[in-house]
Length: 198
Image (tube, rainbow, N blue to C red; front, top):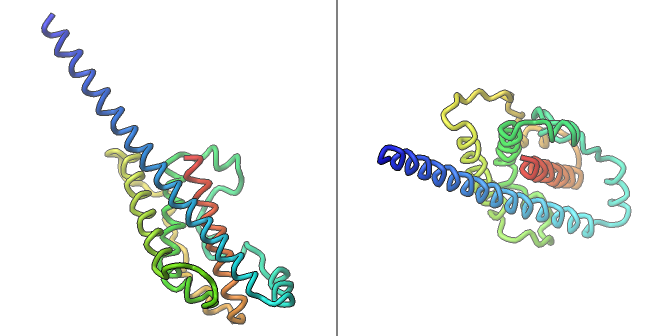
């Protein structure tokens, strides 16, 4: 009888620990989604403010020339549609999200400077800090998913640095600024989608 009582106690402790871990993971996921959602909204506001600051002719010109497929982050292997996203493992979606966030580490430092000074972007370091926090959170979630398994990353190819991509475009500053903002918005939307599905 005492043995059964000890066994039952061990099972209960294990269940409580697992439940605590699951709720901690859920809290981390919720935090990550909230943070990336805020970044996506900030990116949308920045691009709207940028477009509002343009003359009508400049706005028409930009709407014709920028296909979103020209983002350098497109080199990061990712699901191409909703079905593929939903079939992807949680770990794969977290890794892709990590790569996308990581690819913005450098450009986020200059993102505010790229945009016209008349825009209300807030603290220039705000985006960089939020990306850094999000990267740490996603890293913790990835480690939690691995839980002792070897880290076999199936997406080893790092994207080219954003600064090279944008500096070699040879476009006007207006076009480069718009491209950078549009790519940032697109990537934050992707990360938000992947984290929600995961």
